[in-house]
Amino acid sequence: MRCVISVLGKDRSGIVAAVSAVLSECHANIDDISQTILSGIFSMTMMVTLDTDTADFNEVQEKLAATAEELGVQITLQRQDVFDFMYKI
Image 1 (cartoon, rainbow, N blue to C red):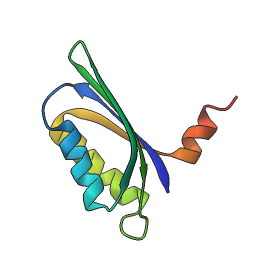
Image 2: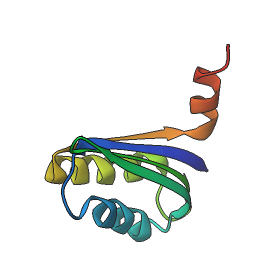
Image 3: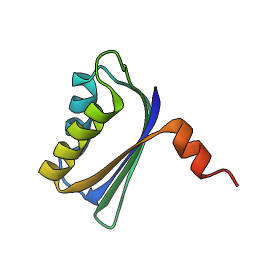
Image 4: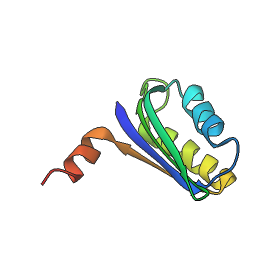
């Protein structure tokens, strides 16, 4: 299942490592990644493929939510098909 992950928050070390660790633990593949820091605000967007046999969407979402709380950032996980549908007009 292809998904879009968005991360937004105050820049600090370890954000990419923590998010990547969760995805690795869930056997998800990072297909593409873009990140930037603007006036101390960290922003990252990732395209990932979830291995739903290992960890389903809800499980990955819960683990990312726990990581977001630990890091003090906002992490959003969306299915790519839902994301694409939302922005088609």
